[in-house]
Image 1 (cartoon, rainbow, N blue to C red):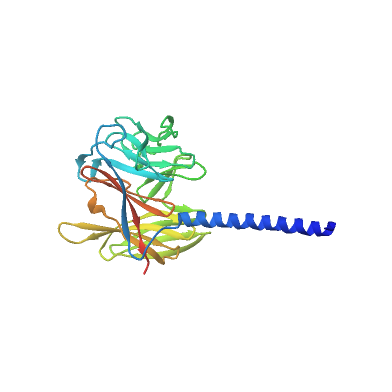
Image 2 (cartoon, rainbow, N blue to C red):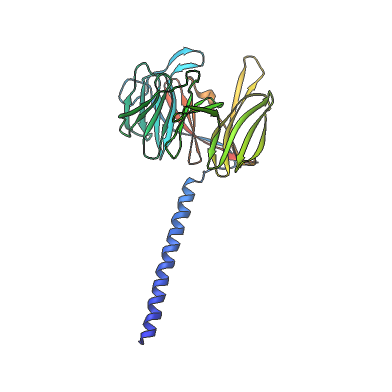
Length: 316
């Protein structure tokens, strides 16, 4: 075979290898995208994932205690990261980490703690919001590495988030946010890049989501069939908003119904699912968590705490 023919053969082989690599990477990326796509059907679904019994054994959740109506010592919040559940237990003053089948770790907190919320960052650092002590920071083994007291005495801490830069924010309901680093208070928003969404009550029958992107503001009107109870934004992505609408029925005794909606950033509904709060016996401060577009629900019940995945039915 002549020299120029060998060059052609080698060039064809190299091209074939390059094409194979590109296709392989494309398939991997496509598979990765498919892993985070929600598995939704036409009808909404509620799938039970696992339960943990109340008890005193290692890894069990403390038996809830009823203090006042709507104020319970119980599992108060949770976080989900890579299919691992981090449960903040205000009854036994502990954090329990489990994959749903077995305990990974659990560690104790102060007996006089007033626990509110929990967050886990990409490195596995665990942040715990204690109303009395501020933000407690633990490594992935549950060892306390820092304690950041809150300097705002007229601020009521109820929630906690940490951004990709490691900045810590403490929230007062869905109204105000305290930056722990600079001690400044701003109106509450949920954000993704330069996209922010803020809830607003208009009147007894109407709410709004204020959507701001690149300094352009738009409004999504949220009508209520019954009476406005609350609008809670659970997650914001590049072109997706997940929010919860709580309606109060005007009847005796007063009852409520709550539904989670998934929309695009213009308000077009993609799917929705009702939250089965009626299954919960005890009150949890943060019973809903969204991770990789999957919606999780924590329900403190009579004999244990159960975890569910809520799968919205596709929008109409």
